[in-house]
Image 1 (cartoon, rainbow, N blue to C red):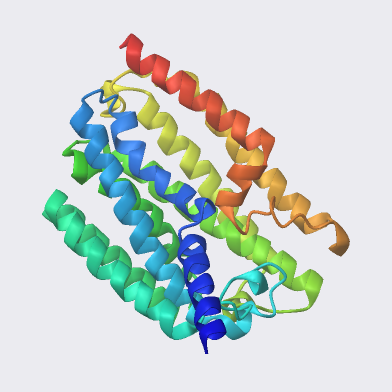
Image 2 (cartoon, one colour):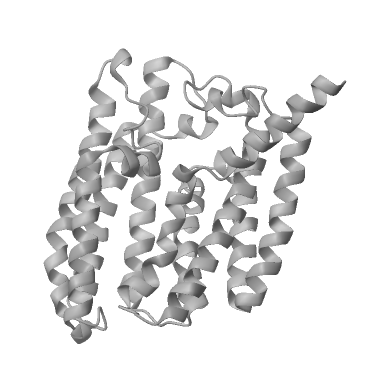
Amino acid sequence: MISKNINLKKNTLFYLFISCRPSQWTKNLIVFAAPLFSFGIEKNIWITSFLAFICFCLISSSVYLINDCIDIEADRKHPRKSKRPIASGLVDKKFALFTSIFFVFLTTSASYHISAYLSLIIISYFIIQLAYCLQLKKRPLLDLFCISSGFLLRSFSGLVASDLKLSPWFILSVGLLSLFLAVEKRKAELSISKKTGICTRNVLNYYSYSLLLRLESTLATSTFMSYALWAAGPVVNGASSSLMLLTTPLVLIGIFRYQLLGDQCEINSENQINLNLITEKPESVLLNDKGIRLIVFTWLVLTILIGFLT
């Protein structure tokens, strides 16, 4: 009995760490988009944005815990997801659900003390993602909008927490980019499913490469155009400086690079699939692909320089 309790404690601590792993937290960095694009330098703006970031880390971890419990059987058939703590049997499902509920109450309470609007965004995010985990991930197209809504709500959270105002072109750019990443995710999943012969998502049966390629093309073009309109500056109710147009080539290169990685996943042989560089998991691409990291770093440096110069 003592040995069993010790193992449970080890698994508990391990899962608490895994549920908040850095690769998941990478998605939440978009919370800082609002203060970054508004060129805000006030300390309070960044403090409240950081608190919003922590809140989203906890609420997104809560959703991941629930999703892992629901998808336990499907995850065990997946080459990467089978190593997750619940799917691999390292952590008990009841404890994972208890931790998830605890995170929800903690995050809702903390976010309300920052901003009532932030609390509303947190609750909306949880409801949408819970609906996605339970049913909407099985519905074609709706699943894409659910995935993209997570990124969009993250960007809004930084906005309301810092009490800032941003151009509608910025919001549109984030929404379109989010949809683009969602399509790339499904495209990569479909590719892996074809190669391994294992369908880990029922919704993949509704998608084809031709459809996803058309969606990809539409969203890639729309994302770049909306970002370019935002970068054009105040004349079109965009960024505070038209110097942001200097960053548009980096955005275009980034979109091309991401598509290239997606196509490599499609054409490589089964034994050559790099699970860290496939577009099924955008945060892993950011952490592992040197090209994407270089583009993002250069874009950040240029954006900060423009902010200081204007």
